[in-house]
Image 1 (tube, rainbow, N blue to C red):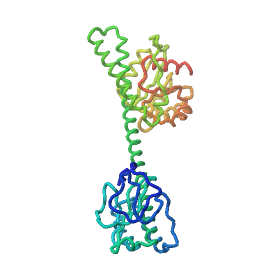
Image 2: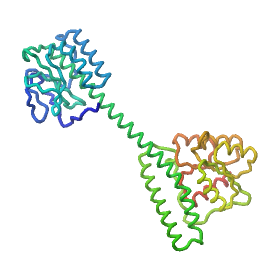
Image 3: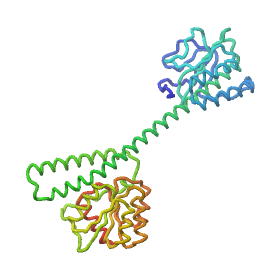
Image 4: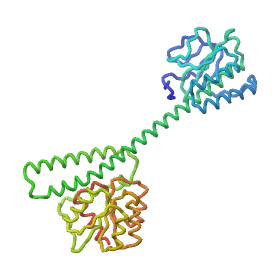
Length: 374
Protein backbone atom coordinates (compact mmCIF):
# COMPACT_ATOMS: atom_id res chain seq x y z
CA UNK A 1 0.00 0.00 0.00
CA UNK A 2 1.35 3.43 -0.91
CA UNK A 3 0.50 6.00 1.74
CA UNK A 4 -1.03 9.22 0.37
CA UNK A 5 1.18 12.22 1.04
CA UNK A 6 -0.25 14.85 3.38
CA UNK A 7 2.68 17.24 3.51
CA UNK A 8 0.37 20.25 3.10
CA UNK A 9 -1.30 19.61 6.46
CA UNK A 10 1.13 20.62 9.21
CA UNK A 11 0.70 19.50 12.80
CA UNK A 12 -0.24 22.12 15.33
CA UNK A 13 1.62 21.15 18.52
CA UNK A 14 -1.03 22.99 20.54
CA UNK A 15 -3.92 21.18 18.88
CA UNK A 16 -6.88 20.00 20.98
CA UNK A 17 -7.53 16.27 20.47
CA UNK A 18 -10.79 15.80 22.23
CA UNK A 19 -14.40 15.59 21.08
CA UNK A 20 -14.45 16.91 17.54
CA UNK A 21 -17.11 18.04 15.13
CA UNK A 22 -17.14 17.33 11.42
CA UNK A 23 -15.86 20.75 10.40
CA UNK A 24 -12.08 21.24 10.56
CA UNK A 25 -10.26 24.48 9.71
CA UNK A 26 -8.77 24.38 6.22
CA UNK A 27 -5.26 24.35 7.70
CA UNK A 28 -5.93 20.87 9.05
CA UNK A 29 -4.17 21.54 12.35
CA UNK A 30 -6.76 22.57 14.94
CA UNK A 31 -9.02 20.15 16.83
CA UNK A 32 -11.97 21.37 18.89
CA UNK A 33 -12.65 19.36 22.02
CA UNK A 34 -11.95 18.75 25.63
CA UNK A 35 -8.51 17.08 25.65
CA UNK A 36 -5.21 18.73 24.89
CA UNK A 37 -2.49 16.32 23.72
CA UNK A 38 0.75 17.02 21.86
CA UNK A 39 0.48 14.84 18.73
CA UNK A 40 4.22 15.11 18.08
CA UNK A 41 5.18 13.37 21.34
CA UNK A 42 5.08 9.62 21.83
CA UNK A 43 2.67 8.59 24.56
CA UNK A 44 4.07 6.58 27.40
CA UNK A 45 1.98 4.20 29.53
CA UNK A 46 0.49 6.21 32.37
CA UNK A 47 -0.85 5.12 35.68
CA UNK A 48 -4.37 5.47 34.28
CA UNK A 49 -3.74 2.75 31.67
CA UNK A 50 -3.89 -0.78 32.98
CA UNK A 51 -0.89 -2.97 32.09
CA UNK A 52 -3.14 -5.56 30.42
CA UNK A 53 -4.60 -2.82 28.22
CA UNK A 54 -1.16 -1.65 27.12
CA UNK A 55 -0.06 -5.22 26.45
CA UNK A 56 -3.08 -5.77 24.20
CA UNK A 57 -2.38 -2.50 22.35
CA UNK A 58 1.28 -3.39 21.81
CA UNK A 59 0.25 -6.80 20.43
CA UNK A 60 -1.99 -4.97 17.99
CA UNK A 61 0.97 -2.74 17.11
CA UNK A 62 3.16 -5.75 16.37
CA UNK A 63 0.52 -7.10 13.99
CA UNK A 64 0.00 -3.75 12.28
CA UNK A 65 3.73 -3.11 11.85
CA UNK A 66 4.26 -6.59 10.42
CA UNK A 67 1.60 -5.97 7.77
CA UNK A 68 2.50 -2.29 7.37
CA UNK A 69 -0.64 -0.21 7.56
CA UNK A 70 -3.55 -1.99 5.93
CA UNK A 71 -7.25 -1.38 6.48
CA UNK A 72 -7.83 -5.14 6.56
CA UNK A 73 -5.42 -5.63 9.45
CA UNK A 74 -6.86 -2.64 11.30
CA UNK A 75 -10.42 -3.83 10.82
CA UNK A 76 -9.58 -7.36 11.95
CA UNK A 77 -8.16 -5.94 15.17
CA UNK A 78 -10.84 -3.30 15.69
CA UNK A 79 -13.15 -5.58 17.67
CA UNK A 80 -10.65 -6.14 20.46
CA UNK A 81 -9.51 -2.52 20.27
CA UNK A 82 -13.08 -1.28 20.66
CA UNK A 83 -13.40 -3.35 23.80
CA UNK A 84 -10.15 -1.93 25.17
CA UNK A 85 -11.24 1.68 24.74
CA UNK A 86 -14.95 0.98 25.31
CA UNK A 87 -15.81 2.47 21.90
CA UNK A 88 -18.89 1.76 19.83
CA UNK A 89 -16.97 2.42 16.60
CA UNK A 90 -13.24 2.82 15.88
CA UNK A 91 -11.75 3.77 12.54
CA UNK A 92 -8.98 5.68 10.76
CA UNK A 93 -10.00 8.68 8.68
CA UNK A 94 -8.23 11.09 6.37
CA UNK A 95 -9.74 14.56 5.90
CA UNK A 96 -10.11 14.27 2.12
CA UNK A 97 -11.00 10.56 2.09
CA UNK A 98 -13.16 9.73 5.12
CA UNK A 99 -13.40 6.00 5.78
CA UNK A 100 -16.74 6.26 7.52
CA UNK A 101 -19.34 8.99 7.65
CA UNK A 102 -20.85 9.43 11.12
CA UNK A 103 -22.88 12.49 11.91
CA UNK A 104 -22.59 12.15 15.67
CA UNK A 105 -19.69 13.60 17.64
CA UNK A 106 -16.51 11.60 17.75
CA UNK A 107 -13.31 11.55 19.75
CA UNK A 108 -10.39 12.19 17.44
CA UNK A 109 -6.64 11.78 17.88
CA UNK A 110 -4.32 13.14 15.20
CA UNK A 111 -2.08 10.68 13.34
CA UNK A 112 1.24 12.15 12.24
CA UNK A 113 3.73 10.76 9.71
CA UNK A 114 7.23 12.26 9.52
CA UNK A 115 6.06 15.10 11.74
CA UNK A 116 3.13 16.05 9.50
CA UNK A 117 -0.58 15.64 10.03
CA UNK A 118 -1.94 12.68 8.08
CA UNK A 119 -5.42 11.96 9.46
CA UNK A 120 -7.30 10.91 12.58
CA UNK A 121 -8.02 7.91 14.71
CA UNK A 122 -11.73 8.29 15.41
CA UNK A 123 -13.96 6.68 18.05
CA UNK A 124 -17.60 7.08 19.13
CA UNK A 125 -19.58 6.04 22.19
CA UNK A 126 -23.28 5.30 22.27
CA UNK A 127 -23.64 7.27 25.52
CA UNK A 128 -21.69 10.28 24.24
CA UNK A 129 -18.12 11.45 24.49
CA UNK A 130 -18.29 11.89 28.25
CA UNK A 131 -17.93 8.11 28.47
CA UNK A 132 -14.24 8.35 27.51
CA UNK A 133 -12.08 8.39 30.59
CA UNK A 134 -8.40 9.21 30.92
CA UNK A 135 -7.41 5.57 30.45
CA UNK A 136 -9.38 5.25 27.20
CA UNK A 137 -7.98 8.52 25.87
CA UNK A 138 -4.41 7.45 26.62
CA UNK A 139 -5.06 4.11 24.94
CA UNK A 140 -6.43 5.88 21.84
CA UNK A 141 -3.37 8.13 21.75
CA UNK A 142 -1.05 5.09 21.80
CA UNK A 143 -3.07 3.39 19.04
CA UNK A 144 -2.80 6.56 16.91
CA UNK A 145 0.98 6.59 17.41
CA UNK A 146 1.25 2.95 16.35
CA UNK A 147 -0.78 3.67 13.21
CA UNK A 148 1.55 6.60 12.42
CA UNK A 149 4.64 4.40 12.84
CA UNK A 150 3.13 1.75 10.56
CA UNK A 151 2.30 4.38 7.94
CA UNK A 152 5.84 5.73 8.13
CA UNK A 153 7.34 2.28 7.70
CA UNK A 154 5.10 1.69 4.69
CA UNK A 155 6.15 5.03 3.23
CA UNK A 156 9.86 4.27 3.75
CA UNK A 157 9.42 0.84 2.18
CA UNK A 158 7.72 2.43 -0.82
CA UNK A 159 10.60 4.89 -1.24
CA UNK A 160 13.16 2.09 -0.98
CA UNK A 161 11.23 0.03 -3.52
CA UNK A 162 11.08 2.95 -5.95
CA UNK A 163 14.78 3.57 -5.45
CA UNK A 164 15.58 -0.09 -6.11
CA UNK A 165 13.41 -0.07 -9.24
CA UNK A 166 15.08 3.10 -10.52
CA UNK A 167 18.51 1.60 -9.86
CA UNK A 168 17.54 -1.59 -11.74
CA UNK A 169 16.37 0.51 -14.70
CA UNK A 170 19.64 2.48 -14.68
CA UNK A 171 21.69 -0.72 -14.59
CA UNK A 172 19.67 -2.30 -17.42
CA UNK A 173 19.89 0.88 -19.50
CA UNK A 174 23.63 1.07 -18.92
CA UNK A 175 24.10 -2.57 -19.95
CA UNK A 176 22.22 -1.95 -23.20
CA UNK A 177 24.14 1.29 -23.82
CA UNK A 178 27.53 -0.36 -23.29
CA UNK A 179 26.61 -3.28 -25.53
CA UNK A 180 25.44 -0.86 -28.20
CA UNK A 181 28.67 1.09 -27.85
CA UNK A 182 30.63 -2.12 -28.47
CA UNK A 183 28.58 -2.80 -31.60
CA UNK A 184 29.35 0.70 -32.87
CA UNK A 185 33.05 -0.07 -32.93
CA UNK A 186 33.15 -2.22 -36.10
CA UNK A 187 30.90 0.32 -37.85
CA UNK A 188 33.27 3.10 -36.87
CA UNK A 189 36.40 1.18 -37.87
CA UNK A 190 34.91 0.19 -41.23
CA UNK A 191 33.89 3.77 -41.88
CA UNK A 192 37.30 5.17 -40.97
CA UNK A 193 39.07 2.65 -43.21
CA UNK A 194 36.74 3.49 -46.09
CA UNK A 195 37.32 7.22 -45.57
CA UNK A 196 41.01 6.62 -46.30
CA UNK A 197 40.22 4.92 -49.58
CA UNK A 198 40.90 7.10 -52.66
CA UNK A 199 38.47 5.00 -54.70
CA UNK A 200 35.36 6.47 -53.07
CA UNK A 201 33.90 9.32 -55.10
CA UNK A 202 30.78 11.43 -55.24
CA UNK A 203 27.64 9.72 -54.00
CA UNK A 204 29.46 6.85 -52.25
CA UNK A 205 31.57 9.24 -50.22
CA UNK A 206 28.48 11.25 -49.25
CA UNK A 207 26.72 8.03 -48.13
CA UNK A 208 29.75 7.14 -46.04
CA UNK A 209 29.75 10.62 -44.53
CA UNK A 210 26.09 10.18 -43.56
CA UNK A 211 26.86 6.81 -41.94
CA UNK A 212 29.71 8.27 -39.93
CA UNK A 213 27.53 11.18 -38.82
CA UNK A 214 24.86 8.76 -37.56
CA UNK A 215 27.52 6.72 -35.78
CA UNK A 216 28.88 9.80 -34.04
CA UNK A 217 25.35 10.84 -33.02
CA UNK A 218 24.66 7.36 -31.66
CA UNK A 219 27.88 7.50 -29.63
CA UNK A 220 26.78 10.82 -28.13
CA UNK A 221 23.40 9.36 -27.17
CA UNK A 222 25.11 6.37 -25.53
CA UNK A 223 27.30 8.74 -23.52
CA UNK A 224 24.18 10.53 -22.28
CA UNK A 225 22.60 7.23 -21.23
CA UNK A 226 25.76 6.31 -19.33
CA UNK A 227 26.01 9.68 -17.57
CA UNK A 228 23.90 8.52 -14.58
CA UNK A 229 24.79 4.84 -14.80
CA UNK A 230 26.52 2.91 -12.01
CA UNK A 231 30.31 3.08 -12.42
CA UNK A 232 32.02 0.48 -14.56
CA UNK A 233 35.47 -0.33 -15.81
CA UNK A 234 34.46 0.92 -19.24
CA UNK A 235 33.45 4.29 -17.81
CA UNK A 236 36.65 4.65 -15.78
CA UNK A 237 38.90 3.97 -18.76
CA UNK A 238 38.66 6.88 -21.16
CA UNK A 239 39.35 6.29 -24.85
CA UNK A 240 42.49 7.73 -26.38
CA UNK A 241 41.74 10.80 -28.49
CA UNK A 242 42.33 11.12 -32.22
CA UNK A 243 45.82 12.03 -33.37
CA UNK A 244 45.87 15.11 -35.55
CA UNK A 245 48.71 13.89 -37.74
CA UNK A 246 46.63 11.24 -39.48
CA UNK A 247 49.69 9.00 -39.86
CA UNK A 248 49.08 5.41 -38.75
CA UNK A 249 51.99 3.64 -37.06
CA UNK A 250 52.69 0.49 -39.04
CA UNK A 251 53.87 -2.97 -38.05
CA UNK A 252 57.49 -3.99 -38.25
CA UNK A 253 58.53 -7.08 -40.11
CA UNK A 254 57.30 -10.33 -38.60
CA UNK A 255 55.08 -8.79 -35.88
CA UNK A 256 52.04 -10.93 -35.12
CA UNK A 257 48.84 -10.20 -33.16
CA UNK A 258 46.40 -12.67 -31.64
CA UNK A 259 42.90 -11.13 -31.54
CA UNK A 260 40.29 -12.73 -29.20
CA UNK A 261 36.63 -11.72 -29.30
CA UNK A 262 33.38 -13.69 -29.25
CA UNK A 263 31.71 -11.32 -31.76
CA UNK A 264 32.44 -12.39 -35.34
CA UNK A 265 31.90 -8.95 -36.87
CA UNK A 266 34.35 -7.40 -34.39
CA UNK A 267 36.96 -10.07 -35.20
CA UNK A 268 36.57 -9.51 -38.93
CA UNK A 269 36.81 -5.72 -38.83
CA UNK A 270 39.65 -5.57 -36.28
CA UNK A 271 41.68 -8.21 -38.12
CA UNK A 272 41.20 -6.32 -41.39
CA UNK A 273 42.48 -3.13 -39.77
CA UNK A 274 45.48 -4.91 -38.21
CA UNK A 275 46.39 -6.46 -41.57
CA UNK A 276 46.19 -3.04 -43.21
CA UNK A 277 48.67 -1.88 -40.59
CA UNK A 278 50.97 -4.69 -41.63
CA UNK A 279 50.51 -7.18 -38.79
CA UNK A 280 50.06 -10.89 -39.22
CA UNK A 281 46.78 -11.70 -37.47
CA UNK A 282 45.20 -14.81 -35.97
CA UNK A 283 41.69 -14.58 -34.53
CA UNK A 284 39.81 -16.87 -32.12
CA UNK A 285 36.37 -16.64 -30.59
CA UNK A 286 37.13 -17.48 -26.94
CA UNK A 287 39.83 -17.33 -24.28
CA UNK A 288 39.98 -21.11 -24.18
CA UNK A 289 40.67 -21.24 -27.92
CA UNK A 290 43.34 -18.57 -27.45
CA UNK A 291 45.14 -20.61 -24.80
CA UNK A 292 45.04 -23.74 -26.96
CA UNK A 293 46.53 -21.80 -29.86
CA UNK A 294 49.27 -20.31 -27.70
CA UNK A 295 50.24 -23.77 -26.45
CA UNK A 296 51.24 -24.72 -30.00
CA UNK A 297 52.26 -21.28 -31.27
CA UNK A 298 53.25 -18.58 -28.77
CA UNK A 299 55.36 -16.49 -31.14
CA UNK A 300 53.05 -13.47 -31.02
CA UNK A 301 54.05 -9.89 -30.45
CA UNK A 302 50.78 -9.02 -28.65
CA UNK A 303 47.41 -10.44 -27.60
CA UNK A 304 44.31 -8.24 -27.97
CA UNK A 305 41.24 -9.54 -26.14
CA UNK A 306 37.71 -8.51 -25.34
CA UNK A 307 36.86 -8.16 -21.64
CA UNK A 308 33.40 -9.74 -21.44
CA UNK A 309 33.30 -13.25 -22.90
CA UNK A 310 31.60 -16.49 -21.97
CA UNK A 311 33.29 -18.99 -19.63
CA UNK A 312 36.53 -17.00 -19.16
CA UNK A 313 36.66 -13.22 -19.23
CA UNK A 314 39.48 -11.15 -20.69
CA UNK A 315 41.18 -10.45 -17.36
CA UNK A 316 41.23 -14.11 -16.33
CA UNK A 317 42.59 -14.93 -19.79
CA UNK A 318 45.29 -12.25 -19.41
CA UNK A 319 46.23 -13.64 -15.97
CA UNK A 320 46.78 -17.06 -17.48
CA UNK A 321 48.75 -15.65 -20.42
CA UNK A 322 50.92 -13.62 -18.03
CA UNK A 323 51.56 -16.68 -15.86
CA UNK A 324 52.53 -18.99 -18.73
CA UNK A 325 54.09 -16.51 -21.20
CA UNK A 326 55.29 -13.56 -19.04
CA UNK A 327 56.85 -11.63 -21.90
CA UNK A 328 53.68 -11.66 -24.03
CA UNK A 329 51.73 -8.41 -23.57
CA UNK A 330 47.93 -8.13 -23.51
CA UNK A 331 45.64 -5.27 -24.49
CA UNK A 332 42.04 -5.53 -23.25
CA UNK A 333 39.16 -3.89 -25.13
CA UNK A 334 35.85 -3.39 -23.36
CA UNK A 335 32.45 -1.86 -23.77
CA UNK A 336 31.43 -2.94 -20.28
CA UNK A 337 32.99 -4.10 -17.03
CA UNK A 338 33.01 -3.54 -13.29
CA UNK A 339 35.19 -0.82 -11.82
CA UNK A 340 36.58 -3.28 -9.29
CA UNK A 341 38.25 -5.14 -12.18
CA UNK A 342 40.83 -2.38 -12.64
CA UNK A 343 43.14 -3.72 -9.92
CA UNK A 344 42.81 -7.22 -11.38
CA UNK A 345 43.71 -5.86 -14.81
CA UNK A 346 46.94 -4.32 -13.52
CA UNK A 347 47.92 -7.53 -11.70
CA UNK A 348 47.17 -9.58 -14.83
CA UNK A 349 49.82 -7.72 -16.80
CA UNK A 350 47.37 -5.96 -19.08
CA UNK A 351 49.29 -3.15 -20.77
CA UNK A 352 46.29 -1.07 -21.79
CA UNK A 353 42.56 -1.02 -21.16
CA UNK A 354 40.72 0.33 -24.20
CA UNK A 355 37.13 1.46 -24.09
CA UNK A 356 35.21 0.66 -27.25
CA UNK A 357 34.55 2.29 -29.60
CA UNK A 358 38.09 3.56 -30.01
CA UNK A 359 39.05 5.56 -33.12
CA UNK A 360 41.11 3.80 -35.76
CA UNK A 361 44.19 6.02 -35.33
CA UNK A 362 44.12 5.65 -31.55
CA UNK A 363 43.74 1.88 -31.79
CA UNK A 364 46.73 1.68 -34.15
CA UNK A 365 48.88 3.68 -31.72
CA UNK A 366 47.73 1.60 -28.71
CA UNK A 367 48.85 -1.58 -30.51
CA UNK A 368 52.18 -0.02 -31.48
CA UNK A 369 52.84 1.29 -27.95
CA UNK A 370 51.89 -2.00 -26.28
CA UNK A 371 54.33 -3.93 -28.47
CA UNK A 372 57.14 -1.39 -28.03
CA UNK A 373 56.92 -1.39 -24.22
CA UNK A 374 57.70 -5.10 -24.01
